[in-house]
Length: 402
Image 1 (cartoon, one colour):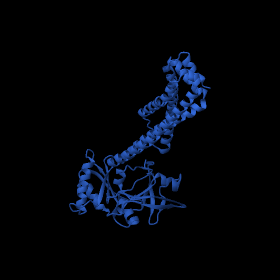
Image 2 (cartoon, helix red, strand yellow):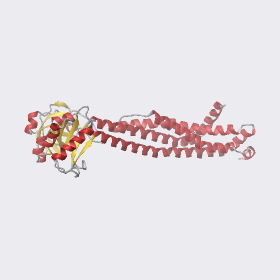
Image 3 (cartoon, one colour):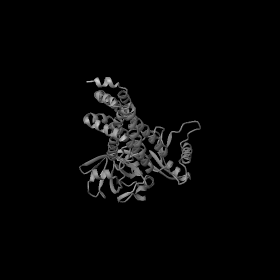
Image 4 (cartoon, one colour):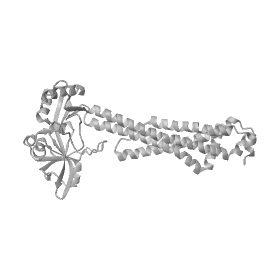
């Protein structure tokens, strides 16, 4: 009986192919939008977590002021000194590396080419903490760091922009206040989920940066890693106590610096991404309801068009439940067909989006099943009312219908 009902439903659907396609389209768009939004959102969450984790789960960033970074660079609050970073390194047993760090934007020139990039004052400790590796040439030597020699390491983006396919080792780059010899090329790290190109960078010895670029001995930021087995919470407390003492902050006064934990940053960013993903998925789910209303509308039209057919079936002995089931199955077939097509389209769009955004493609089977079940539910709910109307028709009145 069910097979016969299903056969009749499919025949009725294909009698009006274009109308059925337009009816299904609402469900297809709704399911595809939900799956694509959720999948891309989950991929973004994983990428954010991976980007922060690549900096180290035991990593802290010590910055002057309470506002963190501002547009255009680091804050203009009271800066740190080299002695502050050395004190954190030497006096705190919980700390593995305390690397001073300064940065500014600069236009660099080579021959007829010029490029605006980030000029970073770094040392060997910072390169170790941030997992910078040299793909070509060499890193700074200790003597070059101590003497503040004008040497530099270029990121892959800078290398391609200024030098193309030629070997940059031994060439000289010029900025407004500095000419430096390229001694190495950093290994490519790619673009983060925040849209930051990690390879658009030039590293020079920190003392060179201070003398030739900044014109002072300030340190804008201290990049800290905790020792294995030491919690970042403990490291944060010890850093705060030491810096309050060094910066002569009285009890009751607020810190004039901030310590940012990468785990906290990851948690905040993941939470924001989750909320945005849920919001977008909720908006997309509205189109499923719109698709359900479209099914109900078309089924009501179908019932009106087939009034005489319904009257004949009832007159020759069809039960009310059989008529109800026929139209309900038609609505369910439409919604399930839309759900299946929507799943395929949604996963396809998510795969393309993940590739374009350079994030993991991580489809969630639960979300796929839920979207399909929801589309089936839409068919049952919105198909029930037209089906009930057909089943309650008076056979005599239906036969009189023209």
